[in-house]
Length: 355
Image 1 (cartoon, rainbow, N blue to C red):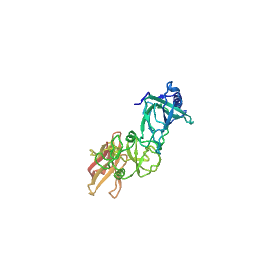
Image 2 (image 1 turned 90 degrees about the vertical axis):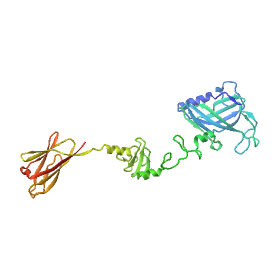
Image 3 (image 1 turned 45 degrees about the horizontal axis):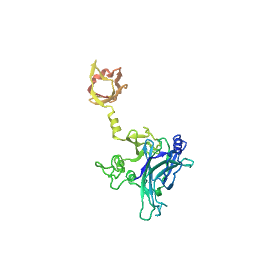
Image 4 (image 1 turned 180 degrees about the vertical axis):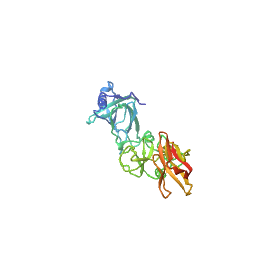
């Protein structure tokens, strides 16, 4: 069984890493090489494998955090055309990861070695061997990493498939992509056009997305988490009340709850020398209705009055000012200004206000 000592970043690799951290270049990882040599000196000083035999493309890679990157390589003794990739059988005792800077200068970025390495035989048409090599090396989080992957020579590993692809029998969960069952019951997903059918408008996307928002469509605001109808065409990427109108239940119910509550109340009537005064609390007064009848002519009339306006009665042949509204700091007064007001009977007085 192979016993490798671990990856060591070479001096050239460290120089490239430092330049990448200073934004002078990217680390362009290019290939993976294996060989039959074994370095007995300082691995950091190496610029190439001692006895390189074969090289392979990068199959995949994944950032693991803390500046570490896991590279996957498939070592095979057979080419894609079915011939042997190995000239002479050997044991893998050294391996290297190579990288370039933005100017195309390629270096040995990291080196690993070991005793009793994996055996690679010459392919004879029957003994095909594929070895999965996973290599974790340091590439600082602040460094700009670029990886060259030749898709024509890569394999899909089980790990990669489970991470990136969905099986036909896999069902979606809150944390995993998969098959989604459409419907309106629990554990099913609402089909996209159903939302448009419920709201009565065509869904246009997110307000925060770039592009034209079309009047008559509705959009989702990722900030407020509500839906809004677009009132006129706009390319805004934020919610402007002049361009969008809330149509979600919550903001609409909030508006309804904040509407003023209206009340109606019958007030007191005060008579003085055949004249009367109606005293109405001024707070939040809106309007009032006075129902009166004439003793002689027998007709009835309803007079609507508001603060600051005089009330006129136009039923008799001679139009005359009968009622006047006056106010002070606390009340509204509806008063008669005609000594013949006694001819009128007051049937009811109601005033309306809101809280």
